[in-house]
Length: 324
Image 1: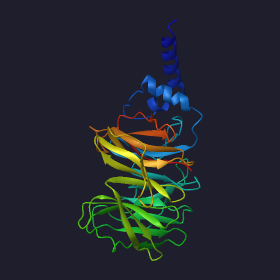
Image 2 (image 1 turned 180 degrees about the horizontal axis):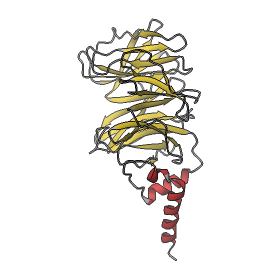
Image 3 (image 1 turned 90 degrees about the horizontal axis):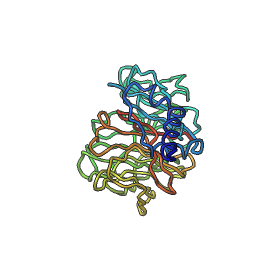
Image 4 (image 1 turned 120 degrees about the horizontal axis):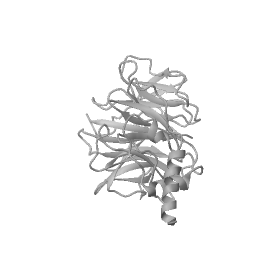
């Protein structure tokens, strides 16, 4: 019998046995992986460790899902009755932080790894948007409005006290700022756009004890960022011909190393716990919008940098976070 035929049949059976939820549980119509993609998944089966949470578009709503880093075990965590977005693992891997409209407007919540014990952490009538947390989960960076003048805050979780971040030394005014706090709590990388006084780009600044941003440096035109554990570098997306490319950038902005190519939209990068892999969302350049796009979750080893697709959803899968 033709060896290629036998191999093809094996891969099809493998996909149905190991990845059944991709085809049976999702309510949106799903893409089917190619034989090459099935081979990629088979090559990492049981070898790449950890769990990845992300948000999935289902009809008109977003929900929180979880998948093993080798592409198995796809499972829905949120109830699907409200918009749930921006899932982020706590540093100890015991909680998932996210934002939800279940109270009527966007607020920040936490739940356990099974989607249970949901708690509202905002405890306010204001809209709040989660950015990230520091290494010991004591400080949470969040914003109150994305459409107004740039405002960002630190919530001290043990005391629930809130401190506004002072960007007065940054020349950008009246625009949007999308910040990410370094794990050591000493720096913030942020995207500034749609304002005046500074060009659209990713910037990095020092965060002093009074929550003032100082010594701001411009990194590059791009978006999204994710810090390494030691706060010495971060991932970001840089605009290139044919979409965006993922880069590793040192905190001082002096070294920028490309780890993916253009040709599509590569967004929402995050590290694996050992920082030997990355996870992100990607979509063909014809489908840029998150709501109507065709984003799926990809991982790649920093050694060979070969993208491996984990999800096969006809709608969007974005904002991945890899469990520590």
